[in-house]
Every structure is written in structure tokens, then in C-alpha cells.
Image (cartoon, rainbow, N blue to C red; front, side, top):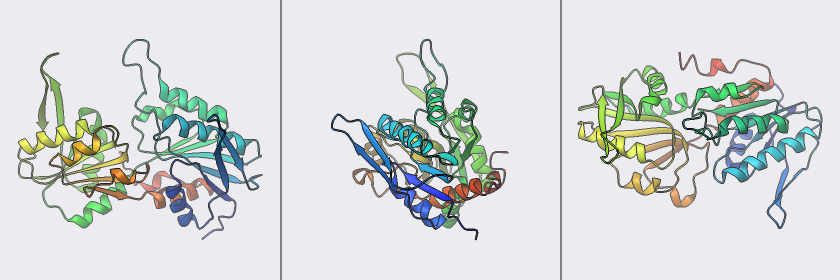
Length: 318
């Protein structure tokens, strides 16, 4: 293996455990970045080692508290830029504000684009992220962006389960592209839950497009926030005759009533990754966490040595 001594990995306060797993893969120590707060809440950063001429990677998902973690990332980038690093890569396993990617009604912002501008202006030369909520966010950046996929991580887990008659299901029409990629990798059937509202007063009706009766089901999504769509899809699949229902989502946002909804649903297991740290009080037996630290470590190594990253996924979405 080549010497990784020119690689420096720093972590903000959002997910230091993931940063340590990345460093373990790279066989480098975690960089010393001191993150503190002034009495009025302002973020204070000090990079406590020499970064001049180094290839620097900053691990900081912009998860809850989103604004604090985003601001922390921007300040760390600025501190390292002013310390004459050769290249700065913002490693954002979870890209906050990604759901605000377009104007879906009058007089609203495109906040995903604003965040892209902030990261670029702060001084990042490159961005590394995972399973973006909307693919067009890649075009919001004027610097290179690498979007990794968790599909191989999930596939290894499901292969060990040896589930017969597996069908991959998208919980909504918007997630069909991702579900199709997973179905191809799993060599499984494909279905989608089509949500339709009867009128403004009556509740949504679930229609299952595809055969799920008597099948084991894996629901695929990029994130689980309040889990409303997820548990509605689980209920509809059960009513349609599905057997065991699993769900795989890269980002465990798990906000609001998510845990309560999952516990009260017919979901066998929710498999997520550690792009976002899950608080101890939200870790229920039905949630399984897989680490993407080694995958991010491989991607960082390939960026450093100017190698292709796309080969990691063997044409996942083609």
C-alpha cells in the first residue's frame, strides 16, 4: 500500500466516530482540530497541526443540528484554506438541505444551491458525499463532487440473510431509479407504492404497482425522516399480501415521531448506515446500523491518488 502520510483527515463535531472509522481504514491518525464555542454561541476553531501543502479531508455531515454543523464545516474549511493546504475536500456523508433542491411553489429558496455556494466560497476544492436526495445537486457545484452509493453495503447485508422471493420496492414514484438499481444488484423483482389523494379532505390511497403477494419485500429509500411515507408503504404492502418487510435507507434522519411510528409498524427491520449518528435513545432493536467508513476511506484514498471512484460501484445506476 502507498504511504498516506500526505493525507490529513479532520472531523467536526457532527460525527467523529465515522471519521475515526475512515482513519482506521486509511491507517492515519485523526487530525487535531479544536472545536469550541464562545459564550455567545459563536463557533471557535483552531487547527492544531501543520496543514501546509497537505491533502486535507474534513468529515462533517450536515445533520441535526443542521445549521450549527453547516457553519462549523464552513469555518473549518476557512481555517484550513488560510493555513495553505494544497487541497481541501469537504466529506459530507449526509448533505443537509438536500430536500430543498427546486422551486416547487412561488417565492421559496433553492437552499441546496445556496449551501453549495457557501461551501465553494468558504474554500473547498472538492466535495465527497453519499446518496444525494436529488441528483441535480451535483450540478449546483462549480467544483468536483463525488456522490457515493450505499448499495453494495446493503447488498452484502441482504446476501447474508438469504431471503427467498425478494422484491425491491420504492416507497414513492420519485425513488424508482434507486429501487431499480437495487433490484438489478439483488436480482430481485421490482415494485412501487403509488400514493394518491382522493381529494383535499380524504386521506391518501395506496396502490401497489407490481407483484408483492407472498413475497419478501425490501423498501429502498435515500433517507428516513419522520418515517410517515415508510410506515404507510409498509401498511399498504401488508394489505397487499407481502410477507416479511424490510427497509434500507442510507441516512437515518429519524426526526419527530419516526421511532414511535417504526415501533408501531409491521416493519421487520430498518437497515441504515452511519452517515448520521443515531442518539442512544433512538436506537431500538429494530434498527440495524451498517458502517460506510471503509467505503468513504476507499474513496478518499482514490481521490488522493487521482484514481477513478466510479469503479467502486460497477455502474450502479446504469
